[in-house]
Length: 101
Image (cartoon, rainbow, N blue to C red):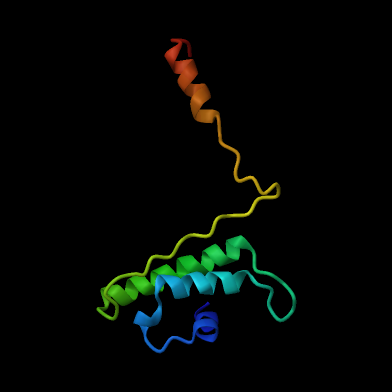
């Protein structure tokens, strides 16, 4: 993941990793690689999680003032309409409010 970051962004210093540059990094990760394969959203989210950990360590070591904001990618779904909302909580709430069970 860090090799990809260097290859895509070529940062000279940690402070070069701005939110805008990291957004560009995400968009480049979504593109197909040389083999024509695109990375999955899970892979991209995993890379970003590792990057946040690395940047958090850099802040703790005093190498960076703060972690740049990294927007989490929205996960694509098969229908493209987002995740279905769960009704589990509403059902149990109705059951408890009616006094039964």
